[in-house]
Structure formats: C-alpha cells, structure tokens
Length: 307
Image (cartoon, rainbow, N blue to C red; front, side):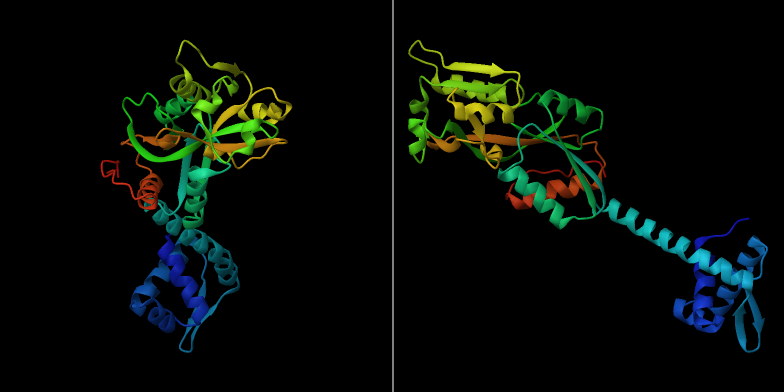
C-alpha cells in the first residue's frame, strides 16, 4: 500500500465539500487532477472512499472511517512541515547555552528571558558548570554556545566580548562597610575573603590578588569546596566577606548585603564573552547571536557560521 499526503489532502477536501468540483476549486487545481489522485488513493488502500453519481459524491461507510482517521494524520504532517521550516530558520528547534556564573540577575538573565519571550518555539536549555567542562561541551556538540565570565582557553573556537557587569562585595549586614553606598578596593584590605573553588572563584581570586596585593602583603583568601550559595549563606555569621558578580545579586541571604566596588577609574567591572564553533549549523544559534548583537549594539561578524 502506497499513497502520499497530497492524495489525502484531496480526499479530505472532497469529503468536506461534498463535491469533487468544489474541492478542486478550493484547492485551485483541475478537477481531473483531484479525481485521478483520489482514484489512485482508493486503489492503494483497496477501498472505495466515495460513491460517484451525476448528483455528486457521497462517502462510503469505509470511506468515512478512513477520512476520520486521515484528518489527524494530515494535521500532524502539516504541523511537522511547519516545525521543520521554523527550525531551519532558527524559529524553532533547540539551543543549549552553557555558563559559569549565576543567572539570578544581570545581563545573562535578561538575555535569556528576552530570547525566550521573542522565540517561544525554540527549546532553550542551559547548564552551569566550570569553564573547562563547558569548553569540552562545545567540542562534543552538547553545547551550542558558552557564555563565560572572564577568560578561557578558546583555541579553535570563536570568541567575542558580549558585555561587562559590576563587581560587588558581599558583606555581613553589621559590617562597618555595609553602611556605605559603595566600597573601594582599598577599603577591603585586611578582610578575609571566602570564595568558592569552583568557577568563577579562580577568576575572582586573581582579581583580588591583582587589586590588593602590594606593600609586601597578600590578601587573606580562603578557597572552599562549597558552592557560591553555601558561602553567601554563612557570611551573616561574620566569618568573612565575599566577592560576586552582578549576575549573582538577585539571590538574597540572611544578614548579607551587596555593595558595588569602585577602583581609581570608577566601578569595578568584569567581562563576559561568548564562545562557539563556526562549524555549528544550528540555525537557532545564528539567530541567538543576532539577538545578542542587536541587544547590546555589538559589531562582531558571525557570517562564517555553517549554514
């Protein structure tokens, strides 16, 4: 048994209109074309779908059963075609984003929410992990794009700067610096810093060493095998202070406040960059890069992406 979607479409139209003539007009085809294809369909399934007469056509009992079953089949086929066309244009399908920082606030969260609102048919998923795991995910095609805070080894991948965010001090609410609107790097000398050993802890540690090391002193930095959230949750006990990026400031913890850090040139900032493969043919990635480029008024070129 062999028949095609077009033959189903013709037969359903004839059943709905009760006439080959009216069905052919509705489909904008010749009546003879419609009639021949329905006859081929009947021969393929071995059942007469219509009784023909001078007055028109009527469905047989078997034909009525066939048409009722064929309608959802045709609807699903049309839906599949529309979905594939949308996926080919980046309007549907899937996109996997990797990141090594929190998305409770900041530009990454705003970007993800904005993209989802503009592209509800794209199945967007995300994973937070260390940069080494995310770069490996690009290599194995498990991740379409990694958006990383700070620098990463990007040999073989495209890298473009996306945006910068403020660096904040996380302080116990009874800390003397908590009374200020902003704090300076020099205010943080002598503090004990609690950081996670996981990403982006090493990036923040290097920042602290660069800003605070000098005059023969080394900052007191404690790297813990705990999550960023676990460290922030105990700061209220006066165990120390921590440093976070703006993207982590959406989560609140008991007796902990956030204060922006300033240096000699103004607010302390940390950059975020995107990493992807130019041989990634996912149309949704192309549209996502276009979305970021427009949103942040960037000038990078991604025309080299595989199409």
